[in-house]
Image 1 (cartoon, rainbow, N blue to C red):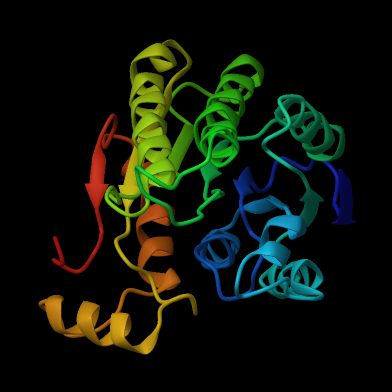
Image 2: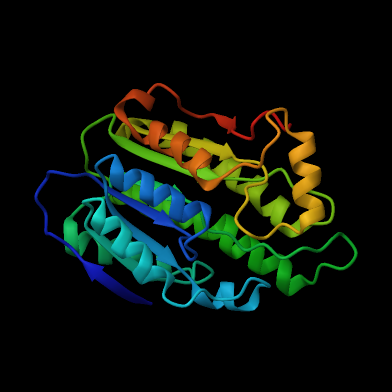
Amino acid sequence: MTATGEGRGVSGARPVALVTGVGRTVGIGAGVVRQLAVSGWDIAFTHWDAYDARMEWGEEEGASEAIRAELAERGAACVAIEADLADAGTPERVFAEVESRWGGVSALVLCHCESVDSGLLDTTVESFDRHFAVNARGSWLMVREFGRRFSGAYGSGRIVALTSDHTAGNLPYGASKGALDRITLAAARELAHLGITANVINPGPVDTGWMPEAVREQVRAATPLGRLGTPYDTAQLVDFLCSPQGQWINGQLLRSDGGLA
């Protein structure tokens, strides 16, 4: 695990958000950290370049530094941490890195995922286990670490996780995201004594460069507003849930897909 970026130290002026899965400038995670930076958050984000490198879109060289520079322009202190969430020791190390720079984290936003298409008959045990290690176990350990370390004012803590309703043809991804839902919703009850809220967002298909043109047209035609979802759409809801105004929304699985479903 490596980290890059600069911190301004613990000033108390801006709360800290820890966002996972910010590996590409066009991704949902990147949209989320940009919006949170504008809204007054300092940002720690994780990325795992080895995942992008084995996907069809490939690793985006210099993405972390480009995102960090954008956040600095928006007034946010930022640190980028390369971290494999399939490693059970990663969450503790990530939180320790962030706390050593700025102190406690106020919001945890889970945007990371393992997502490799396969169905009931062709999913390998190795692939199934890795999906659950990253999407379910890794998320649980991040939530657990957040709950163990949180020391902010009652009512100020936030957990937001991104999910999916994929099933057929994308079995290990969809099944592990289903587990993520339950973990996050459990946190709304089990971490209530700390004043932490926890919600799940299903953003539907988001245009981050992964859709073939035929899929883009199909999704656009099926969406009442006649367009594709963007990272900005998801980021707006994450931003609201993390704000003081979003406190009363808790323990919910929210659809933010333009009416597609």
